[in-house]
Image (tube, rainbow, N blue to C red):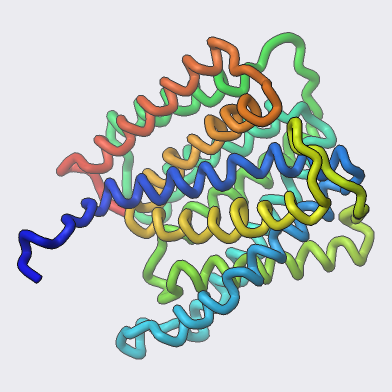
Length: 320
């Protein structure tokens, strides 16, 4: 086949952003599906646990094959030093983030908890600066400010919002978990292939949540009654399969692959689009029409991500 007959591959940044956006869309659908399960009688803890466990099982075989078929020199392959990274990913980026957010929304409004958790990109910027000396440039900082401001508009926080100190602490813990997700996902020095990291992290996270359920820390309630998703009534297992396959297996798999191409800082800001997708899915499925202020916030997030990407691509900028 001649070079003229070959389909040109996407540049790394374009491919990375595409994968990251697919991941955000997969994460974004989880809110609609999880709400349907909870309204049908499932506890949030049980819904999250089954979602993560199914995702891990879906990726188990591909993750194992990717681990075994990796063709790298022996020193670069996963060894003893990289196993703690996998465990940390499962406990912090998967189970810890999910559990902390679940408890945060029991004390705070969902919008407030989300806003605190999604300050994670700022935490990533600070971490990469302090830990790796990658000082963000002015354009990157401007993009961060625009994206966070846009997120606040998308969440449409209006009126008197009660603030609980305990809820804020849980939301900050969720933010740490989200930041760990971005940093670990983007680090290809551990030797873990994306599918292996996603599968292992989901399975470890599921085991941690099962343990929390068995000890009573995380309430577990399940039913087999039909579930109503928007105008449709479906069997109870249908939303669970979608949660496991789409919003867990696909979301984490595409997210890690995108992070490897973009780096932790850019990936963390592209991931803010998850909130936009969540709003759109709520509109399409639940007929919850986005307000004009939310649409304006979406534009700010897109502009902020563009600025962060331009800042990272500048010659003077340090790369992840």
